[in-house]
Amino acid sequence: MKTNLELLKSWIRESKSAVFFGGAGVSTESGIPDFRGVDGLYRQKFEYSPETIISHSFFKKDPAYFFRFYREKMLPLGFEPNITHRVLARLEEEFHLAAVVTQNIDGLHQKAGSRRVYELHGSVLRNYCMKCGKFHPAETVRDAEGIPLCHCGGIIKPDVVLYEEALDEKTLMGAVAAISKADLLIVGGTSLTVYPAAGLLNYYRGKRLVLINRDETPYDGQADLVFHESLGTIFSQL
Image 1 (cartoon, rainbow, N blue to C red):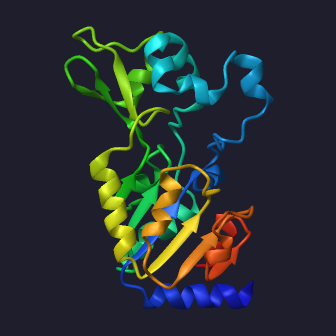
Image 2 (image 1 turned 30 degrees about the vertical axis):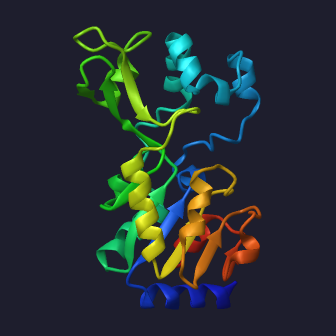
């Protein structure tokens, strides 16, 4: 692994437009659970699968139940950036990293100092009234009893992409443009099985693809460097 780490370091030093593409594994070391790692706790407390509850149709059908699940499982407030978030922010400062493309909704990349972040699945930090369009902070949703309501009486919806909803077109196009222009693509903390997000790798035209994930991914065979380690292990040495 040491040889591969030295190679990765040299690629980063030479890069002027690297892009980092990350998933839930980026934030697990901050204490935020991997949503797709469904355990017994979900089944003990909720009658439906997480995928069902956070679908657009379920939100419309039973918003009270949706918000019960959302507050307990998907509203990661009070967490801090970890070593991966901080190193990525530093690399952007040093003009090696052009952008971060993330599947996470926790806002920790921005909290660490990253400025160009494409949040494919939205953010819990943005919430808007479905009636008047006014934006509200995440604390409004967290502290509400039952369904969070705006002053106008409209439901306050988190600006996150639910199942059955399309990705934001502007965000998606920005991510595609960044990846297609990158001279180095580092992918970390994602199984690369969730589409359409995983399909963004197909827009990469560079020759240096790095995958960092504890488990194998469908793209391992296409990568130039593969680390089956935690992100913290790798980024703490960068």
